[in-house]
Amino acid sequence: MLPGGHLATGLGLGALTYAGTGSAELAAGCLAGAFLIDADHYLDYLVVEGQWRRPGPLAFLRYSFAERSRRLLLLLHSWELLAALALLAAAWPRAALLGYLAGALLHLAFDVRVNGEAGVRRPIAFYSIGYRTAHRFAAERLLHPPALRVVPPDAGARPVRDFFGWRPRVRPAPVVAGEPAVLVGPAAGAESGALR
Image 1 (spheres, rainbow, N blue to C red):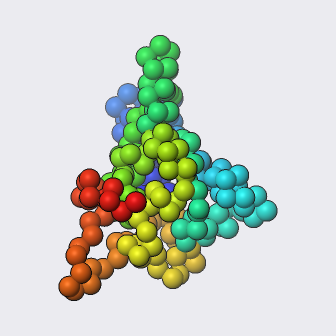
Image 2 (spheres, helix red, strand yellow):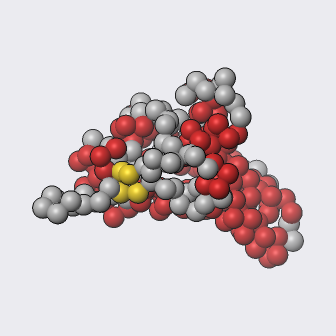
Image 3 (tube, rainbow, N blue to C red):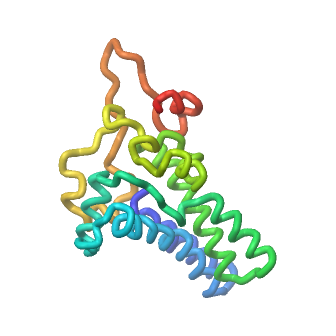
């Protein structure tokens, strides 16, 4: 899902939480978990992709929306981190932490659904740091091959507009008549593993 979609869902979750509980701390945690979790994309851009000479937000968004990343570390997008935070919350239940967990779970649920349709090979496993480590964080091993995804030629050309979108502009490649269909996204199930 694109950042604008996460911002909208985070604001919605935070507003509902605040309306239901009156806790600004819980609501802020929900927004942080649903939206600020994406800060790891920017850290990957600077450190992993080596783009520290072009640190500006527009350069980052252009790079990201054009699907130029070669490695996908994404430390905050991790089932393992959420499990560790859940254990921490069980021992130290603070409203902001509980809200962060709720927002992060919402974020990852949307990512699994939307990014699975846009080209992640194994959408649920992808959000495991162990799975990404086993694939050496290599985008070509974690995403469907370019032949199975269509990245529009103007992807990244309008980063501000794209930021406020809902779904990535990447989509499954059309099926050519006479060739077997290739499933992508959550519907692919075990078949997507054959694309390694």
